[in-house]
Length: 318
Image (cartoon, helix red, strand yellow):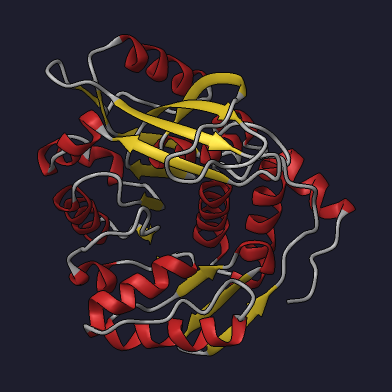
């Protein structure tokens, strides 16, 4: 399968702390490390490790971090020949603080990612001929995503959109995607944007309420929606109704890139089979493995690892 990711690539700077600091406080950290990341790069590498022929359309900076970043992503089997090197802008950098429970907080300077243009995407149009999957996120400009969606439609490519990090966007995009994959806070923010009124975040455990909220997106053009709710599982909404799914029980180490792993694995299996009942457990297993490892890209599993995990572990009921 050929998969295209239009999205971001960042250098992650990660430090471990016992607990996340409140505003104005200082914590002494440890185990500092850096590595490749960014939602686009994470999802592209995950797709490649799961066996897809993966192409990343991104814009990298002209700096030392970006050079190492391109090399690291390429080493994982992602084709970067349609990406751009911006000689005037620094690449994206994300500062990540991770506590002992695996929770994290991040601050991002997206740098060159913010300059990805429709023309950059158009230069990769040949990739869309024969491709089966296009995966998008919100760490690049909206007009680049819109151009990618239109190319995908022209060439019969399935489009999966992960609205993260959530921001105001052209809601025309909802009608152009086959699968929309927000988490719970993103779902609430999308509805607020669409309906012009505050939506109370139902919390990750209230899957029934999450399903009712997600169903409202269908009135605004979204066809198939998967809402992730952390360790509680996820909810799928389509024209056939609403269905809840549990997740796998693991001992988390670092939640960085878990959402990207879920989205990439879900997208791959969905594009392969259009079987959501098989796709969601596969995606949940991929995310479960990811949270048991440190870092973003280094934590992403291979397809063999995901399949072995599914054989040895049981998906919990929601």
